[in-house]
Image (tube, rainbow, N blue to C red; front, top):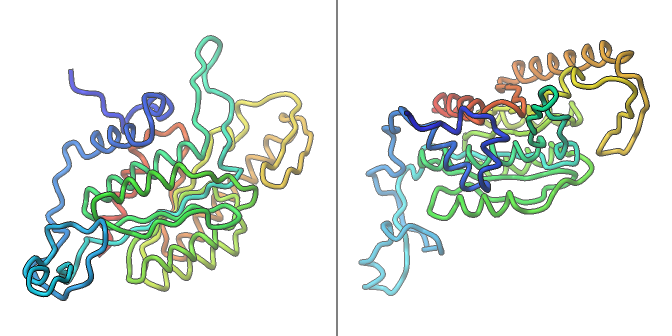
Length: 309
């Protein structure tokens, strides 16, 4: 029997089998099965200049002649060190740390990951996929403030840095996506790729302005809108309920049956608006439900990468 591909399996079941590193490797290994290796090389053959050696640099590019002659440690730089520079911008606000009721009927209850747990696993896999393409990958985590920043690198040890950043605490109450995207624009000086991973419960004009700035700078921008299926239409809820905003604490009691139609219309309008905004700005918008296999966001990110010159 062929080996099971983790990128095509239920994400909660896959994530239960190990930590971020183990699962991400399994997911990416499954995804790249059958894919051709990129013909582009991480280093061009044309030498450009030297720069001082920094801890973590690949020793293959250390200039040993200069080290022996002048006792200086320098690294050879080439015209193009990586295929592209990518920065993942991850929303770690309180609204992301939420999941709806398990799916299924009596006796069959499939657990679902929180939006944040799904997004973190997705970012870990995306990072590994891009690094295996010899791209430089960085990470910005934000809630009400920028929580952590890992500048884009492609050298050995970068994935470990990204995993360590994902393990840091977050989940602040508010969401300031503009801060995270502004930090990303400072990390990627030349035209590259920026991927925003968020539930988009954010201030619309603020994020629109940030996306416009990234596109004006020549960056390829993809927005991965993470949603729990229960957020889409309240289909798994009934009776009376109290709806609470996890970021502001505002609580509103309501009978689900009485508000379901209005809720669905509001959500549909919001999704249509995000699609329209991203299309107008030249950014890609993809809705990612937390019960979708991890191969879905990987496929979209890989397609976006192939379009970056």
